[in-house]
Image 1 (tube, rainbow, N blue to C red):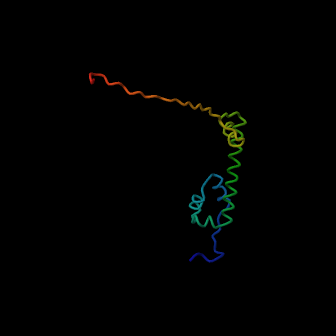
Image 2: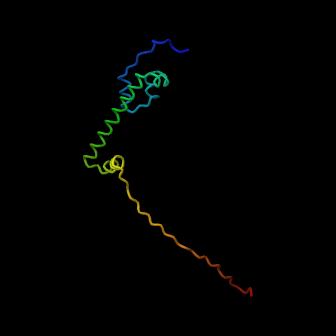
Length: 112
C-alpha cells in the first residue's frame, strides 16, 4: 500500500532542474534526492523540472558548439554542417570487375 494522497514529500525542484542541466539521468536524480525512480516518472512537477533542465543543457551545449564554429574550429564546422545542413562527405568508389582464368598446371615427369 502506498502513501495516502496529499502526503507527497516536497522536493527541491530547483535542485532537480540543476541536476538535469548537468546531464544527470532520472535514475541518478532520484538516487540523489533519496526517492524511487518510479516516483520521478510519476510526478509531473519533477518530470517538468527535469525536462526544463535538459532543455537548458541542450541550449547551452548548442551555444558552445556555435561559438566554437564561429571561432573557426574546423571539426565543429564540419560536424554542424553534417547535422544541420545535411552535408556529407562524398566517397568515390570504383568497382572493378576481373575475370581470372585458372589453368591446370601440367604434370611433369614421365607418366606417358
